[in-house]
Length: 548
Image 1 (tube, helix red, strand yellow):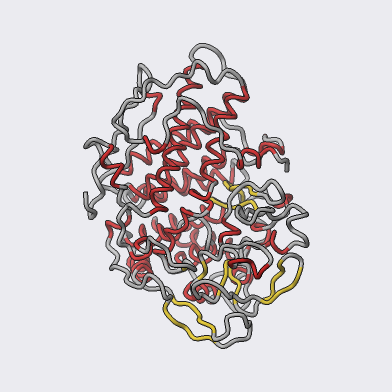
Image 2 (cartoon, rainbow, N blue to C red):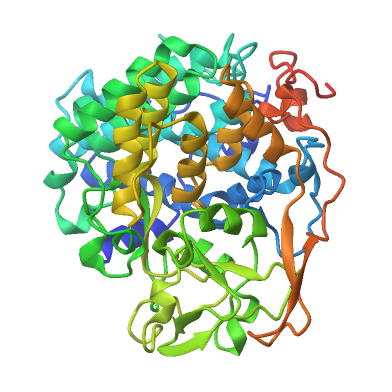
């Protein structure tokens, strides 16, 4: 592993002539975007892309803000009162800071990818692209589809899609027109799949990258996101389950993707574990004096880190997810590696400790998946943890999409298409790898619910959206389980002595955001921010169920 990929993650380079994200639906013309002074060489093509990699990794994206939405599920509590309780109570307004931050940031990335694609395609009309430029074009297609996906499923529905335009579709060049709102989210998904297909044509396989470029887009990542797109598409069109099966089959047979040998390997701080078979798409993160990557490991660390390091104390496990994980047995590795509970032994800055949480709103637990780098001896001096606690990145290949996720999507596809036997095989593969007993019988949708919830806990696989799409499901069991969780308030442990690992506790409802609205299916989509509606000049309709 070289430092180059971390430079990509840390650095955000501004490019003159590129419209910012806040102008996404602006009706004012900004003039033609010129490319004749850019994309003159390999360096410029890569530099343009590096700004996208850096931008979505930051705090306003996958570093923290995107995760606040998970307060609407029942697996995490926030640890501190926030000014946007509506994200956890389903009283969405569209004006919540995390929603607008993520919307603006991801739209910026889409438009930057548009600019790169348009510029390199224009260059390709008159001269052959270099190998690096061709790869960069593939990366831009992937990143545009990737960011489009995270906007589309969170704002689109079967009744209306999200605004999106491809600059290369304008015969005389993009004229700063307001992006058209797609008729349904399925139209968005179709365009995302097309971008992933275009990416696959130009991207290398992951194995073709040298050490300095690992972490860039590659073919298997595009196939993996196609599987995820088709699974979400199946919420509106059940025929798409077959494509999920085909994509995961391709990941296995063509790209050699599979499960890691051990559960611990997935969250290891050792570089040699970063690029195993389970890897599909991650944020490669680092510590030391450079930092870089996602702050999330430090965000979920105990506030002030017991006086040793500046953890932020946010997004803590609920008792509900602890109990769900406990169904697989006391002390099972998936539980102990996912959650720290009072009295549990763990390593922190080279010393063995027993966990307790003495600060913030009570939970009684901490997320443990990303703690390996913090456990090393002298982790700052030895390069495992960032020296700046205000940017608490740590050395971990932070997962956004791993093979267990898509394998469980294939299991779901098998269940939804009447092949429970194959679903059982896929679920048992995950369970056995995670050192759990295989299912006692044939898999059910209740088993699927448990496996996705537990295997992917506290990752950016979006458990909340799983619940939302399952609430639409024709499967009565999935719908009932989703409805129960969506309409529950999380429980926590409240300890008599916060700083005593042996202190007795009581079980109580989490003290914040208690007035949760009854979940309704229009809440599958967030409302657009009001300024986006205003700037659309009538071209964008607010989502059903929300004030225009």
